[in-house]
Length: 364
Ligand code: SF4
Ligand code: SF4
Image (cartoon, rainbow, N blue to C red; front, side, top):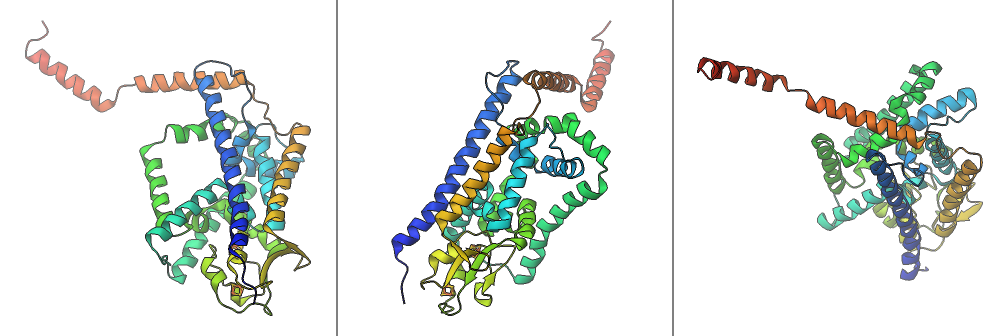
C-alpha cells in the first residue's frame, strides 16, 4: 500500500487554491475598475479608460437572451457581447471538466468554500441534513434555472428578444447590477446575510441548493468526457473520499462518477490513501488529468475564448461613453425629481397643521 505523501496533498490543494485566488483577484479588479468607471460617469466626467467587459459575466439573463438571439440569427448582439462569450466558455468547460468552473474559478464557489470551512470550525464533525430534505432542496436550483430558460427560450418571441437587447434596461444592466451592491437596500442586504449564515450552517448551501448557473452546468456536465474514475481493484472502500466530497457523492457505489454535483475539485483524489485508486480522466480513463493539467485546460479555455472574442470585435460593447453619461444624467434627474415629491401622509399632516394654525389665528 502506498500512502500519499503530505507534500503531494498540499501541492494539489495549492494549485486549485492558486487558481481560485487568481480569479478572485481578477474579478475584484474588474469590479473596482468598473466602480471607478461608473463613479466618473456619475460625476459627469468622461472616463479616460474603457469599461472592463468582464463585468458582463454577472449578467446571466442578458447572456441567455443573447444566446437565443445568436441561435436564431447567427449574430452576437453588440450590447453585452462578452456576457455571451463568457457564458459559452463556461458551458464548454462543463463538456470536458464537469462543473470544474464552480470549484476552480467561480468567486461565489470560492466564498462558499470559505464559509464551509467556518462550518467545520463551528461544528467540528459537520452537520448533515436528512436525505429527503436534501433532495427537495436540490430541486430548487433546477426550478429557478428552468424558470429562466423556459421563459426566455419558449415564452419570449424573437421580436421581444431584439426589443429586450436594445432596451435601456439591458443596455445599462451592468450599472444597475453595480448599484444593487453599492446602494444595497435593507431587504437585499438581509437576504445576502441570511444566505451567508445558511452557508455556514449548511455546507455549500448556495451552490448545492440555489445557484441556477450551477444547475445548468450540472445538466451539461452529464455529457462531459471527463469524470472521476474509481479503480475497484485498488480501492479499499475506506470511505475517506466520500467524507471529504463537497458534493456528498456516494463515490464507493460507482466506478465512474457522472453526478451533476461533481465539481472536479479533486478533493477525493487528494485524500485517498491508496495508489491509483481514484483519479480524474478523459474518455473513460484514456487520458488521466492531474490538478496541473486541469488548471491549464481551464486557463486555456478562458485565454483562447477571450482572445478570439477580442480579435473578432465581440468583446467590448458598442455603447459609447457619452451614452453612459446621458443615461447617468437622466437617472440622477429622475431620482432628484422623485425625491422632491412630497409624501401624501406628510402632505396631509401639513394641511392639518396649517388649518390648526389658521383656527388659532396665526393667519389674518
Ligand atoms: S477511492 Fe480511495 S478514499 Fe475512496 S474509498 Fe477507495 S480507497 Fe478509500
Ligand atoms: S470530491 Fe471528487 S467526486 Fe466529490 S465533487 Fe470533488 S471531484 Fe467530484
